[in-house]
Length: 228
Ligand SMILES: Nc1nc2c(ncn2[C@@H]2O[C@H](COP(=O)(O)OP(=O)(O)O)[C@@H](O)[C@H]2O)c(=O)[nH]1
Ligand SMILES: [Mg+2]
Image (cartoon, rainbow, N blue to C red; front, side, top):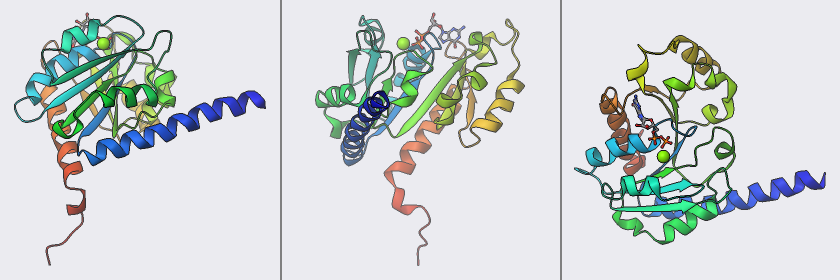
């Protein structure tokens, strides 16, 4: 019983900080996106494609979570307005307090998109609200077509699901139908975008989705209003 209380209080404390983070970022009119996946699914590679494309229209910043090293931040530092690496040590996920610390180092009013690359893990990040506006989950073809059913919690929470490395579809045995079938039971709300950072396939669809999300957030009161 005591153990359960401890876990709950950790999550409650996290959620309180996450609410403050969200309020801070909403107040600055930026859109924040938490990218989650297993290690190696292509989060950083996708950002390497995404950031230069968005830079024509938007100012982008990145918070990158990893246990150790600044390797991802080094890959991205030339491509964004600001890139901050958060080392979690042994932590298998980012938490809201770490993101709050990262936000303190950014000029939020000057940023349109904040991408948060979470620690590569398909379980722990799902439990920790960071205060992000949207959650994007990546699933790469080499991981296998059974993962949506095996890690439902992560996929349930997603606002978009990206099937990455689709350039490998002809090389590996992979049944997209199985992924769609699992998603039909777990999450019918999020679009499934098939893409490859290597070939560029699907990247425009991803960029279009990002643009739509940004516009929807910038003009929320316009939705449903009649001009009478
Ligand atoms: N074939 C292929 N490889 C990719 C693609 N995207 C990423 N990779 C490779 O997958 C590996 C892991 O990518 P990375 O972006 O570091 O994954 P992360 O750990 O999720 O950030 C790297 O060797 C990338 O070059 C892709 O679309 N196609
Ligand atoms: Mg990475």
